[in-house]
Image 1 (tube, rainbow, N blue to C red):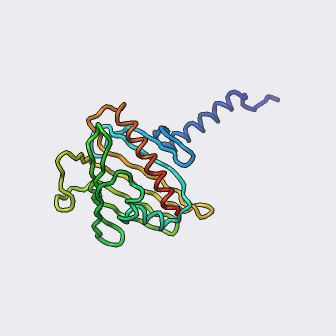
Image 2: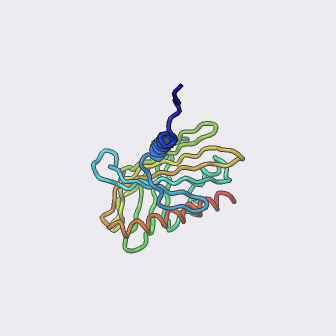
Image 3: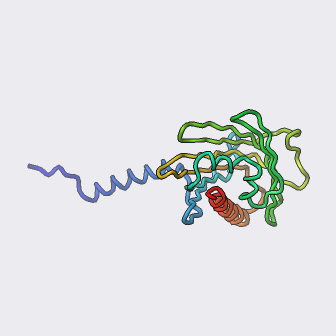
Amino acid sequence: MSDLRPPVVLTFLLVTCQLFAQSVAENDGYQIVRQDEKITMYERWAPFPGTTTNSRQIKCVFHSNADLNKMLAHLYEGEKIKTWQENILEYVITLKNDSSWVAYSHYRIPWPLANQDYLLTYVQKKTENKIVLSFKHLEDEKLGALRKGVDRRPTIGTWELERVANGKTKITYTITSLPLNTPRFITDRIVHNSLMSTINKLIVVAEK
């Protein structure tokens, strides 16, 4: 009677390939670029939606002891935002209704980059255990006129807040912007350091 068991090496290769395929599917081309005890930062470069221009896409995943609604409040209420967003110079929110609003924000950015501002429209979708806050670039001179010497780039992204075990909230933040005309060896360090520092501060203030 012949032995129909697959060779050990073949079995290992099949399992490895399956795990690799699963990992690629889950990460969707993202690579880990920074990590600490609280936050994992992923990055990939892909065309900005509607263009052929390769753009930085960042995803940060972390957990907080703050509940869903408390964390949400820290993502749009002006006084709360100013407690954790580093180098923010101005923040103005214009409500449309209970689930959408427009926010203008202006930031001081370290040299050699120019200061940056954003005019973004936000839409909130909420269920019992999850909140998805989507944002995208808006062009509206009345709500946010362009400023001389301040860089504004088309930007899209999401905040996903999900209630998990032990009363914690899992947060997945993604953001994509058209690239600056600055070499990556300069922008990578500034972008990564600033975002890691800012999110760590968000966790601290939201959990107070």
